Length: 140
Image (cartoon, rainbow, N blue to C red; front, side):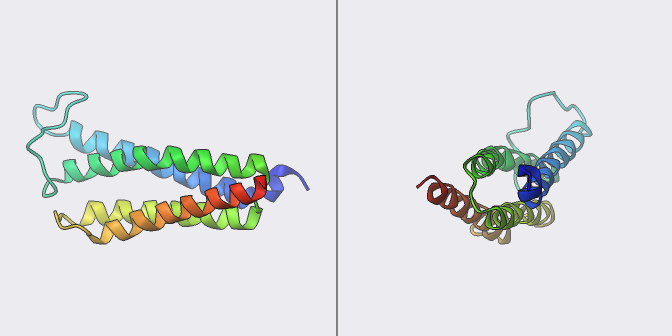
């Protein structure tokens, strides 16, 4: 069985994660760019959670903070031969948690912490840590 066949589920989860990041980028750019007087590369520092532009920007920024580490962990899992089933499952848990985080951030304008989106952020972090543990096990 080829590497691709063993890790097809993992690769599909990685694809969805990257696609989600691109969609978030597009939504953030369009929502910000549609504002009157928008300046490329700058977001109004007076915006807060009540603004969809702020929430779309923060959703994308949060993914930029989290997705690269998960992508690195995901590819490490493939390279070191971590359990393919567990790798795929954990990558999908991360991908779905990022999508849930995105929709909740778009839908709920709250300054409260933890907010509902925080739980999905935490699920994604736990999935990443668990996948890294599987990488460590594969290396031992």
